[in-house]
Length: 340
Ligand code: HSE
Image (cartoon, rainbow, N blue to C red; front, top):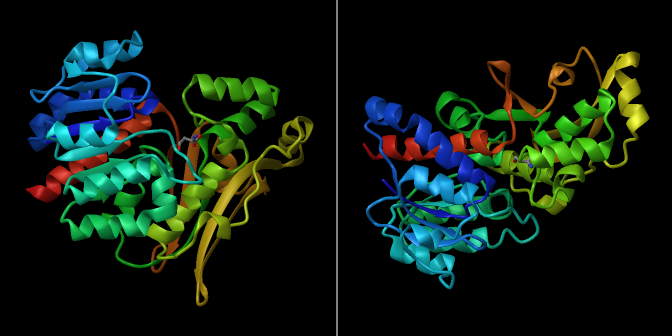
């Protein structure tokens, strides 16, 4: 499997680290040995290497902030489209920063790659929240896969659970879907200021390139729309969903709540009804007895309700370069297994 990476920021670097560490095991266990044959990043430049890039050299280039062109054939002027076309890759891994308003530039890259009959794996929430069903249909039309495990709960498996592990319709999902705000709220409970906690979330690579999307609830909104449409079969657009973030919560209020038997959490929910699917996002003051109140730090959690299982809750890391990189690798492995 030959990979073309479009976007080489935190998640791209995290992906390369996980591939590097677990490559030998993946080869031995599944006969799966993906090669990175092209990387394109608007800031770091481009490298095209049909023979496959050395992961150590690729990691070093990232850490030392060097132009990727130094690793092989490349150059600053190439567009993502040219790189996708010339890479000879079977799979395009789209990892550019999320734009929840337009889905670009990722949506354009994904449409182009699918139309060229290349599989696509992405962690970018914009195109999936805005055009998920259209992109899945385009993939189907072209006989390729479109996978997006890392868009919700990062490397904690959700879509593969729904795809391979469930045999009945999900009627409701409710959970904590933004790692940055959960981390901030947990830190504020411990006495940190909002600004300190946000800076730390940015340093750890949890926050979006523009963290407004996290703290205003828009990241959780994109994720609940993706779940509503892709798992519950809804047809929601982000604008259809009432959304409030955590910026209206005061530090003393968040700090005091546990002493009163509560905890503030940013909760996202989607429900399938006779009339269709609805969703909402907003801060909730949960009693400590609510399982979601026990989910702290960068952890996310999602409870799925379906007959006859009742409720299944998945808890795991919801943000971070390597854990999101793991989602990319899991999607690539799913494509590899499907092809065999
Ligand atoms: N900024 C996101 C979060 C990254 O904090 O959850 C993972 O989607």
